[in-house]
Amino acid sequence: MTEEQETKKCPFCGEYINTKATKCRYCGEWLNNFCPYCGEIVSKKAEKCPVCNSNLNKNEKSSFKEKNSTAFGIFSLVFMFFVIFITITILVYIWNG
Ligand SMILES: [Zn+2]
Ligand SMILES: [Zn+2]
Image (cartoon, rainbow, N blue to C red; front, side):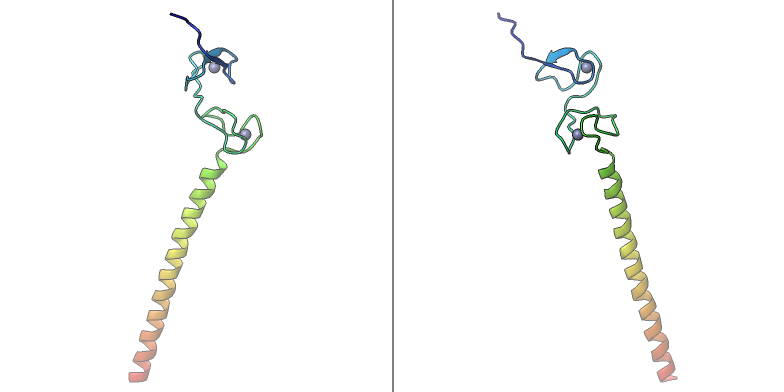
């Protein structure tokens, strides 16, 4: 039995770990979390990529904002229809009265 394990350096603590490892057994950092901007392994807890300095939480926040604005758009659309409906009802009432 040969013990030739392929190893890679943990980007967080510098220890050599199994290439297939998804979590460092020395410092406990996850190694399957990649920066969407530069592709480097970054800590799951990191808010900013240490390699390219990109904000990693920005995406979640902007999508949340988008969802909010969509909900607000639907609400204002419904409100607009409601106002038009009331206006037409009043106009019809005046014309008939
Ligand atoms: Zn480590
Ligand atoms: Zn990056």
